[in-house]
Length: 359
Image (cartoon, rainbow, N blue to C red):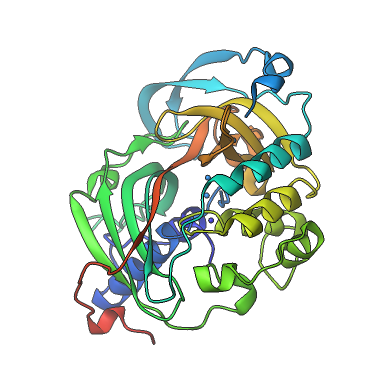
């Protein structure tokens, strides 16, 4: 999961003053782009297969603890809320072994969209939204910091060759409180379903492109794919973190051909810090195994694979450093589920306003 919903969403608040109309439209475009491929915050950044042979090695219990909070980390009073925390258990199975199995399973799916078609991806997402309450109009007092978990069901149509505009349909779901923080009233302002254009401005560097036409030209060997993950300035706190984020971007709301997907999975296993956790759950409630690493802000970011088929299910973000994340250890702060990937001849028609056009 372009910087993935969590980072981009964290930087915007379209509804709050003092945004004017132009700023709101720009923020909306940022939200759509971030939500398209991985609002990143857990990637905060963070945006999502397992065999019977590994079942015995993964039989490790995960503990859960309930705690009560009456005050947000920022110091502002909030309602009493119970937060259940579940720390991921690192298991004695190598990431390379799991990802190798996932790589072998990729041959089962091959969509092969034509350049004049669209890749359509349906998903469910939950990301952290960071912002500030609006300034009090009567007292002039600045609003305090807020956090909540922004949830959606999404369908996105992306041009297979990256030359045409795309479309995203967002169904806003009931938000959830960010663990350790009172949920703000502003969390409920996004409702209903909206269909928005994804205007192609043609400014994405070649090494960061995730359209099918670009992805199908990537290396099919592990060394070449690993070199691609480490190519260019991708941001992040380290090259390793940026490489793992890049891998997620190539899987999230895209279609990566089988040969490149197999190479990518194997390349991810070579990134320092990547290991395996059991009992990972995606946003749709499906259970699998997590392969990931601790990234920025004290959050562990996992790709989730089905425990039997090795199909990629989604992603999740779990707090492992309470101080850095300002949220209880074990808190789930990001979760996605990839529900379907298909090919469409056309994308829905949607009006493109002046505010949507490239600057």
